[in-house]
Image (tube, rainbow, N blue to C red):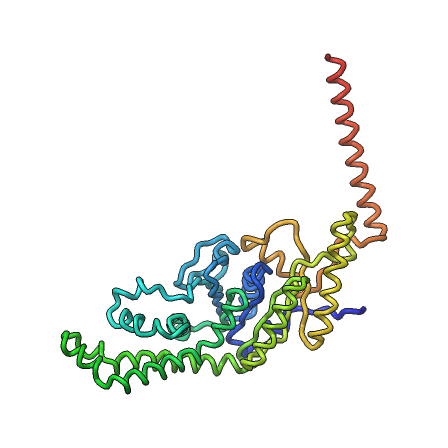
Amino acid sequence: MEIPEGSVRNVLEQETLKWVFVGGKGGVGKTTCSSILSILLASVRQSVLVISTDPAHNLSDAFQQRFTKIPTLVNGFTNLYAMEVDPKVDNDELADDGMDGILSELTNAIPGVDEAMSFAEMLKLVQTMDYSVIVFDTAPTGHTLRLLQFPSTLEKGLEKMMSLKNKFGGLINQATRLFGLGDEFSEDAMLGKLEGMKDIIEKVNRQFKDPDMTTFVCVCIPEFLSLYETERLVQELAKFDIDAHNIIINQVIFYEEAVESKLLKARIKMQQKYIDQFYMLYEDFNITKLPLLPQEVTGVQALKNFSRHFLTPYKPRLIKGTVEELEERIFVLKSQLREAESELDRLKKGKQKV
């Protein structure tokens, strides 16, 4: 079937975009894709921040530079920053921080609230900085979907806190006065802090649901599990009213390539079956196909080199059946023949010495 070629140019040309999420199944190349997207965006935007929310951070490996939870300028750029944040709050970390420690204890009973609060704190930090666009290198699909549920998670947390307040009356306030802890530890202060976070996350959530400001780029590979996960992700994004119109199919072995291996030929056939299904399911999406490479894409220069395939469809260097491919095969065969002859000479000389 005739397959239209796509690229990520539409993401670069959408000047109103503020948030770009990159997500998909684990091990499909999300970090490489988000790193390259941020590099491409940096060429057309004033300032770009790429954030890893995956607990198994790989941004540092991709750029070959150490990143922390503080935005750091990427080497070789004047307007591209990167940071790695853990969306899971460490209770030990909060234990020394007075009210946060008590808040942490109080919210333990509400699944996901600590994570939601951590994400809200990170968004508060990002909101105070003036970046043109922010790229999220997200954790595997399940974590990403939980991240999108944070506003409702905080809502539930606040409702539970309010029910506790109504149930126990001024018990917390009495306890804080009894132990001389002051107003900052009162239930009103704690609820105020939660309310503040809820306001931030709801404001950002409204932006997430605005297709002019937010888009989600799905990364996958041409295999059954990845196709299934992508379909699940696209459906969930639609449920949350989050725009998605780009799919990147990574690690493709192109049929046109001069491939002699039976194993690779079988792999190409298997991949093509799923690629056809992707185009059938997502006919209104921009689908970008990226080649499987013999080496990892790490370091700024390697990322920049690979980025051209995000803008212009990949064309195999040698196409099966062409004069160039035959010339290449003859060159390889001649090289192998020379190596075999020199090895034969070496063995002959070795025998003569004996």
